[in-house]
Amino acid sequence: MAKPPQLIASVDMGSSSFRMIVARVEELHGQSQIYLIDSLREPVRLGAGLDENKNLDEPSQERALLALQRFGERLRSFDADNVRAVATNAVRVARNSATFIAKAEAALGFPIDVISGVEEARLVYCGVAHQLPVGQGKRLVVDIGGGSTEFILGEDYEPLAMESLYIGCVSCAQSYFADGSIGARAMKNAILSARREVAVLRRELKEGSWTHAIGSSGTARALAEICISNGFTEHGISKAGLEHIRAHVVEAGHLDAITLNGLKADRLPMMPGGLAVMIAVFEELGIEQMEVTDGALRQGLLYDMLGRRHNDDMRELTVAQFIHRYKIDPVHAGRVRELTETLFKQLVRQRPVLKEQLPMLNWAAQLHEIGLAISHNGHHKHAAYMLSNADMPGFSKREQNQLATWVLAHNGKLAKVGSLSDTPLHWAAPLCLRLAALFLRRRDNDPMPAARLTLTEQGVQLSLPKSWLQSHPLSQYSLETEVDQWAKIGLVLELVARRS
View 1 (cartoon, rainbow, N blue to C red):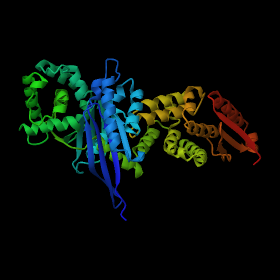
View 2: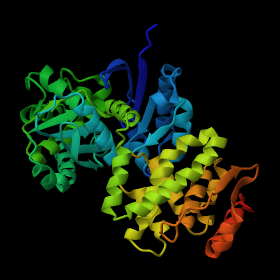
View 3: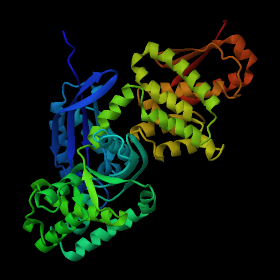
View 4: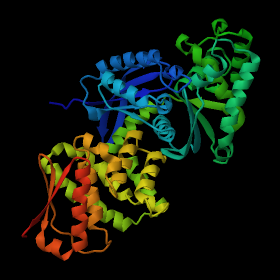
């Protein structure tokens, strides 16, 4: 009996629209190909719900949760490993994002990652690159979303430079065309404001020697459809076509009076904002013609999901780059990683659910000394700040925060991460990292003791040979101090000296 094809899905919670796609994965000669079989789009306009205090208001949250409930019904039979959901700019900047994400995950039925602008750019390029032929030379990909615009220079499947700016079709429309009026002065000011933002990237992008520009996502496709449907251009988006659209909307003077062929009703409120941003991009970067592709963030999520399964995980490359960039001692980091993993696997055998934490723990062990690039004093605090705020391609914000928490916990007092005791089993990983760093403090090649870790009802028991403890008084003292540290946050680490 033939094995049924595998189905995977992605959910893109954009600032303008929420989108979901379901695809079939076909394997041939060790290669994976994705075939789209279903898609849903909801014009949620989440970014329009950000109030003056950067909180998502109740109406926008309600629209979002209803859309996610509908997506969740479609994905009800999927395993969690086959679904990837991400939130972009509107949730990135929202002060009440944590509360909203908790409700959103309940509505969808799957975890949701909030991703950074640079990570969004990488995933957009991944989706675009798989929709285009290789061998075309360098390309500039522009993705105008609801609250941010991503710029990526790349060649074939490789992104070479990635940037994200806080300009988008929803935010621009709210700032300059909120009441539906579209005057010549308002349009000019909207374009100049967007040009001021794009100008920051002008030198980097223009010196990238790209040969052609590609537009992705809803704004680019909507403007291309208008250009083609009204005879402004034969394909894609042209500078002259954008000027024709600009002239028409300014002459109309109001959203209700626009009569452009190819303009869908649900895109009408954001179109003037997207137009202004696109004109700014064309003018500032000297673009005359832009092709448009169906590839976007949601496709990139699917291909990135497959890459992780085939040991082509961007997070591995990011960790390797950080080790090189911040001059982390790779030999010591490797030894700490190996010992941390050895200790942790003892706990995994007793509680298999812990296994899913192992990749993150390995990366935390490799990066635990990254803070030394700033200062030895408080290096674990510097490390936590760096891992929380750096652009880390492949990692979601949730993953970065987990890395930062575990690395912060690897040294010093545990009171600063007391919340670990409130998260079932999340203290097991930093415990093993702390023990590995403690055992390897001398940074030498002395053989490690035969440490045994056992989960107990109260916490963990650490058993070590009595002879080793007697011959390592500094380590014994450090371990006894460690017992006290865990007790202060309500957890039990029991130190046992055994005869052999």
